[in-house]
Image (cartoon, rainbow, N blue to C red; front, side, top):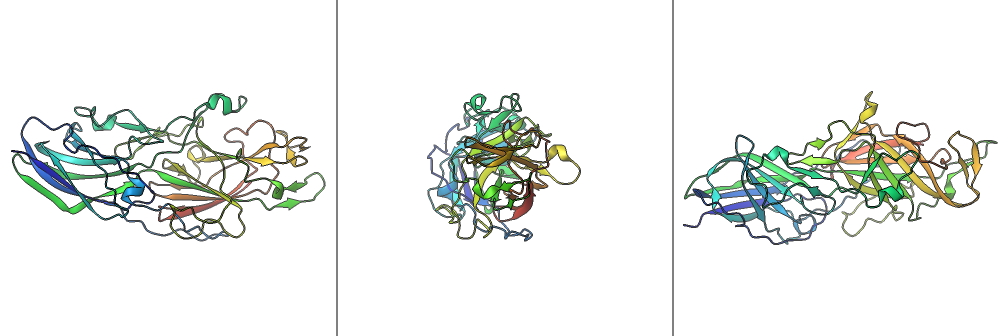
Length: 398
């Protein structure tokens, strides 16, 4: 008798996905098996966030099955934490977020916690497992790690970043789980009435920049309006970030390392949302550029500075721009190049949240080596968080 396991999945996605067909019967069990029907859906998203001096942005990456879900794997985890069975699931091609039903056959009979992982093997993720290798493993040993930046040794500052490791943007991982998934031999269990709710396990760091600050005071000349935010060499570093995620969404390492950072180049200077974003705003009228970067949950507020995100901006300055050297002395650039600002972010972001950081370039950029982590004083940051639905905002004058 062929046993069938049916899954109803509903998705409340917030960005895009391509579909990838897989065999739902992959890894069929050879012992006693049964049939189960389960629902998967997307976790709801609320709008929120306190309005600051800058209006909170409202446009977010859109969400749909076809736009965001590239791979699906369901783990059947027993009471000891062992993965007894695991299945790859063909991803829906629908451009919506409604519940979907999946059928799997010959699932090993038993009582489980069902753990659904989406996009564990896509760009920006380096898993230590595959769908065919997980059976018999402890679920807690499964890790989805960020991918190191290629050629970082040629990009990094050899003075202040010699021991650092940079990572590319995180993949868009979604997770869902529920206890009490019971597979009974020779029967069909129907769980479609209560869908699993897929929720992003990653966060979004949204950078917004206001460069229009000038000063003609002798010895403190500043004209940041000259900064070229459209130059492709402009770069963002987010330091003290997590670099790995387990199947329940726990970030590692537990204590962020100052040598771990996210790195990305290029800023967006158009206020028009991209085609894969929802309608709304991205920039306040006072701002000139923005950048969205998926990261792992983290950051902090209060006295725990060692867990707070440290932001380093490297922006393009023209010839004759008045910068400052490492000693704070005014230096007039004779060649165009990158100058730097850095500051600590008073804000934390949870899974599926957007941390909106409004940077004001109030001081001259620093020329020469990139400022080390913890060397603050030249950046103003405003933060607001939005769970792809909620935005938390923070101001960072630098």
